[in-house]
Image (cartoon, rainbow, N blue to C red):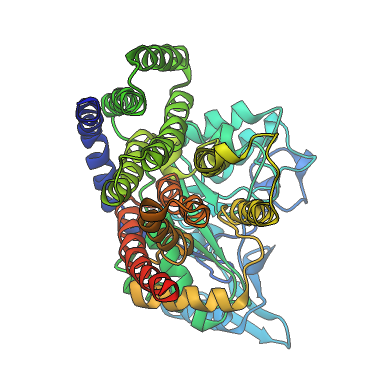
Length: 545
C-alpha cells in the first residue's frame, strides 16, 4: 500500500512537468537554421582603421577583432585589397568585374594576391559584401587587452554595430571592471553572443544571463574530410550547435554536411527558455515526486513531511536565484531516485523483475524531472550547466556498495584477500568512471574512437558504453543470480551495474542535448544492455553447469 501511494505521488509530479517538457521539444525543433562562418571567406568582415570613427588617440591602430582574409590599403580614390588565398582573390575579382564598372588592377605573387579598385568608395564595396555585411551576418571577435576601457567599448559597439560577437581569448570583452557595461550594450544593440564549445572564458557567465546565445563549434584546419561530416552532424543533432567557425577552405563541405543532417544554412534563432509558469509547475512537480519517493523509501511518514518542508523552504529561499533553486532540486532527483531503486533491490522480498523495473523506471523518471527543471534560457543555450554532477555520479554507486556489503564492513571482521581485491577493483573502476564522465573524456583510445564512429554510423545517436556494454549487463545478470543465490560476487555485479541507471540520469543532465536525442540514446542503451544481459546470464549459467 505504501509503495502504491508513493507511486501516485511520483506520477502526479511527472504530469506537472509535461507542459515544460512539451515546450522544450517545440523550442528545440523550431530552430533549424545554421550560420556558417569561415576564416577564409570575404563575407565575414574587414579590418578598418579606428580613426574613421574615433578620436586620434587611437589613430593608426588596427581595429581589433573585425576579421577578413584581406588587408585593406586606402589611398586617395582607390582601395588595394591584399589576399592570402588564391581562390578568394579570384572570387573577389570576379564579383567586382561583374557588379561594377570600376577599374581593376591585380597582381599575383607566391603568397600574396593584390587587387586594386579604382574610383570606388568604401561604402560601395561594403554594399557588395566585400566588407562587413550590410545585413544580418556581420560579426566581430574582440580581444580583452590593455587598451580596453569604457570609451573604447562604447566606440566599439556604436562604430561596428555587429549582428554577432565571438569573444576571443580567455576573457570576454570588458572583464572584470566593465562587464556590466558590455552586458548592457549587448542587450541595447541586440547583439547575438556566440558560445564557443569547450572553450572556457572568464566573465562569459555574466554577459550571457540576459543576452541571446548561439552555440558555436570551431572546425580546425587539419580536420580530414572523412571526419568532417560526422563531427558536424553530432554537433548539430546532439549538442544544439547553430553556428560553425570554419578554419580553412571547407565551407562547401560543411554546408553539404548541414543539409544532410536536415538543417539549412541561414540566420539562426537563439534558444529561449520556456515560460516561467511552466518552470514553476516543473519545480512543484519535482517536489511532489520527491515526496512520493521518500514515502517509497521509508514507512515513517514524518521523514517524508520533514524532507518536503525542507525542500520547499529551500526553494523559496533561492527564489531570487531561480536557476539555483532548479539546480538544487535537480541534483536531489539525480541522487535520491537511484538510491531508492538500490534500496528496493536489496530487500529480501523484492524479486528480480520488480527490482529491474524499478531501476529502469526510476532512472527515467529522474531524467525527465531534470529535463523539465533545466529549461531556462541559461540552461538551454548552454551558458549555464548543472552543478553537482560528479556527486550525482558517485553517491548512488557508493551507496549501492554500502547497502550490499554493510554487514561485511564491521571493523572487528577479518578482511579476506578476495574481498580486499574486490574493494580495490571497485575503487579503480570508480576513479576511471568519474574521470571519463565529462564532455571531454580522459584517456580515450583510438580503437574506442573508431568503435564510437561505427556506432554513430549504425545508430546515428550513439548509446553510451557504460550503459549497454557493461552497466546493464552486470546489473541484470547480477540481480538475476543475486535473487537466487545471494552470493557476494553477484552483489558486486549489481553494485557495478548501478552505473547504468546513474548514467541514464546523467544523460538528461546534459541540457545542451535535445530531449528527443536523450530519449533515443537511453532507449538504445536499454535495449542493447538487456540483450547483452541475457547473453551474460546464459554465459554464467553455462559456466556453473
